[in-house]
Length: 174
Image 1: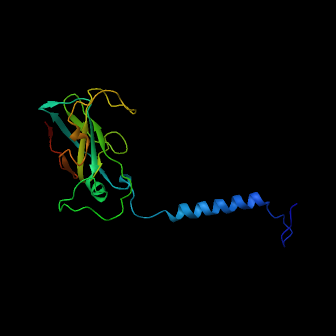
Image 2: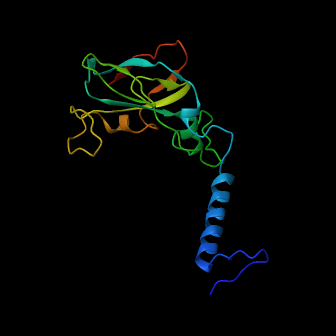
Image 3: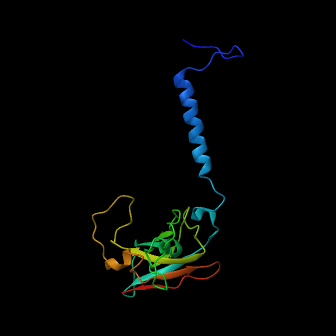
């Protein structure tokens, strides 16, 4: 049975009123999570960034090179800070990690949002993975050909700074 309100309109049924309240609550929760601070590398300008990687002096075609922002790794303790102390701050928001697939001659061009668009300015810990096959979206059964330290940003020993107009130094793996 439906009741009329004071203006003579039919009052919504219980489930409809509950749905409206739930929707209003959902909108309020989503809106409260919005912020004007950048939360992703898509909010930062990208600069063209290219380089070269060699393993034992030779190119490693089809290797995947990934640049991990050091500031986000430091915040979660994944990369030791220069002072040797960890950080007590909350983890930063998720960020996109620029990456590239190495060409036959050992060169690569970083991509963050679309092919070849570059990377945000900053310092990066670099990881390199190489199975000899073209990287695929799903996991591959092909064995890794590089020492495992190169797949860990805290252990790779590869640090690079991306700046507008500055070249990326050659990455030499052994």
